[in-house]
Image 1 (cartoon, rainbow, N blue to C red):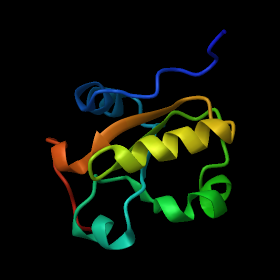
Image 2 (cartoon, rainbow, N blue to C red; image 1 turned 45 degrees about the vertical axis):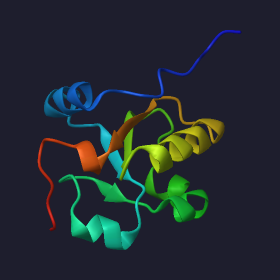
Image 3 (cartoon, rainbow, N blue to C red; image 1 turned 90 degrees about the vertical axis):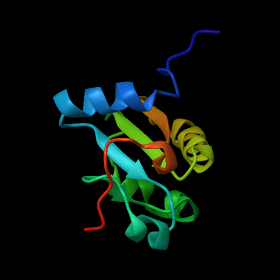
Length: 108
């Protein structure tokens, strides 16, 4: 079967490097609001996994945009990527969890 989707997972090193050169990448953090407030990647958008079905299309209407998804460990991000692919998003990638993110977090 022909796969129209790009790879679902991306190393954090590659994701970070790409984020430095491609400022159009959307970074979606699917942790709870409380987790997000405790520390997140600057520029990320918080959309808790349990709110994804109701709010995704309003927050990220372009289904062809490059989207990196992150959570605490990568598990919720994997679920979000799977849901998003089924919803028609074509360039979405799980970049794991903030627990292993080595490039700094913010609380703003």
